Amino acid sequence: MLTLVLVVILAALVFEFINGFHDTANSIATVVATKVLSPGWAVALAAVMNLIGALTGTAVAATIASGIVNTQVVEASSQVILCALLGGIVWNLITWWKGLPSSSSHALIGGLCGAALAAAHNDWDALIWSESVGNWAKNKGLLWKVLLPMITSPIAGFLLGIGVMLLLWGLIAAMSRAGGLLGRMARPRWVNAFFGKAQILSAAYMGYAHGHNDAQKTMGIIALTLFGAQASGALDDLPAWLSFMHPGSASGGQDIALWIVITCAIVMALGTASGGWKIIKTLGHKMVKLHPINGFAAETSSATILTVAAHFGMPVSTTHSISTAIMGVGFAKNPRALKLSVVERIIWAWILTIPASGLIAYGLLRLLRGMGWA
Image 1 (tube, rainbow, N blue to C red):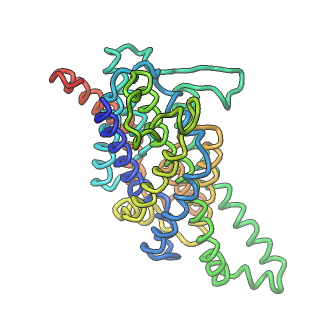
Image 2: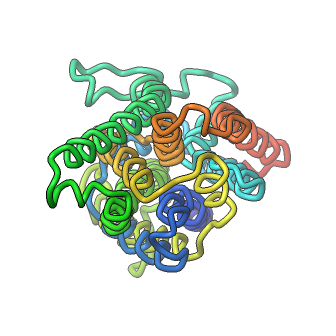
Image 3: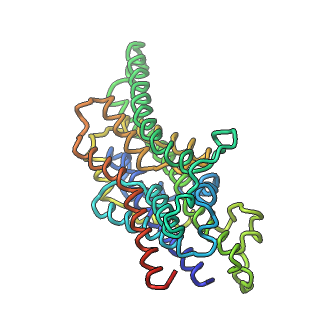
């Protein structure tokens, strides 16, 4: 049983590494597309900021660990978590290979739901649909933490992208009317030069927000695995050198242990450093032509959504927020500038991610059980 727990943790870290190069491509696509930073420097910046972001909160991790599936489902079988991770990993690799910016967050959640349903013999009570505690920010369940943000975050990204873009243009127009030094600073050459530097800050903000939200999801998976293993007695006779794995010994109760936070942060940073250029090409070049001011608006909008969502424990998709922010910026620039064929492919990837990863995880667990391994 302990060996299986270690395998599940290893699989979780593999998922985190893949998340690093898969979703980080989304987070740095704009700064590469506008040629403000070279791919190498953009990846290095994102890796450092991912690490910082991952170390600054655990609200999303707590949601994954105890707010989506009933922990009783995984207490007796770490195979559930393993199949959930494999479902997310397989779908991430498929979409990465196709160059589609699909959501690692939703791939993980879909895998978790599919594996939980298979473990519970299709009993839908294995999933926490909605638990209201009188404060919407603290409510648990798929409705509050997954489905509602899944719908609202893309809309918010699109509208905020439009709003920030219009605000920046309004400020530039006001400076131009003022004349003098301000008028000269409103000229295209000065605007491009300013936002070329400002976009480095927005790219750093985006990297921080990605780590702050996305890295926590794997933290939650590892914590969920350890909570289940503890409940089933698998951690009762740990050798001394593995005593840190016991949830109670490091964190007390069902908090996220510090070693989990640090490990996931480092692994995501390493994954980030490996890059993901196919997705950068789709987001940064194929969807709409970007200039530094557009990249700044898109990154600022997306990072703000991710940071706010992480504060409330919502595992929001980096892919959704940056893609729709770019769409919003492109729409504000020229509604006809958006390449709808690319947008359509991205939307289909969004729609399919949760059911596809869920079906993969469901099938894997049923297969393991059929072979007597689960």
